Image (tube, rainbow, N blue to C red; front, side, top):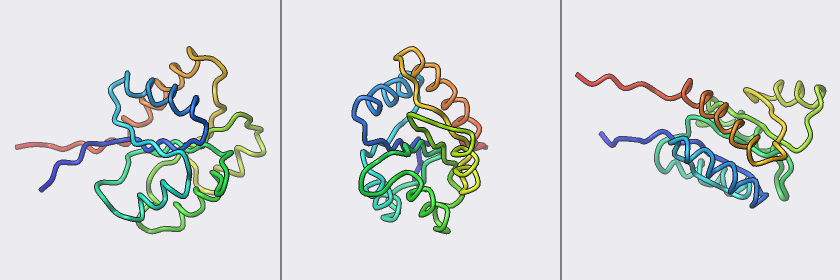
Amino acid sequence: MPIHIPYILLIDDDEDDLEILSSSLKLLGLNIKIFNAGDKALAYLDSKIGALPILIILDYNMPRINGEQVLLLLKSNAYTRNIPVIMYSTTMSPIFEHAIMDLGAMACFTKPSSYSDFKKQAGLFRDLAVLFTPVTIMN
């Protein structure tokens, strides 16, 4: 049986945000797969190559297919519907947050504006990822 290393799938079209968050998560010891577009991430998941991610961190504002559309597609697919999804965006009103949560997101966060805040948010994402990491008991 192949061993699958748990990973987080990070989807964001903003190169700077993608780099800062992914490097912060990697510094915390997490394995990350990165996509700069929702359609590319969906194609990867649809290919069923490897294990599913333990958590998806999804930007809302992206070209071609936005985060809401990606979330709807993830939650309508039997293969991906149980993956926890965190939506994050530069702005997050309570109405927007409730609407996204109603669509199946586990949580919503506003993107930080500073590097130190990105690091703090990465720590929170790590803590959430740990909750969803499967535990393997070896005899």
